[in-house]
Image (cartoon, rainbow, N blue to C red; front, side):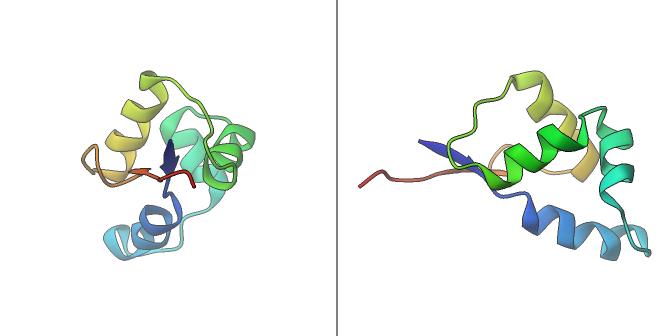
Length: 74
């Protein structure tokens, strides 16, 4: 199963831009609704589209392995 690690890029973003970044700003910058961002961040095994992933990669300026991780099911 794949999962998402958005906490790390969200926490790192203020260091990159030099100021606090709000969830509303992330939503506006990615075009992804805050509710969906919250579900992606907090729901294990959340299913989303590659378009959403592309927006996250672009916004956080990261590669495919950074916000997505493989989680082994037990």
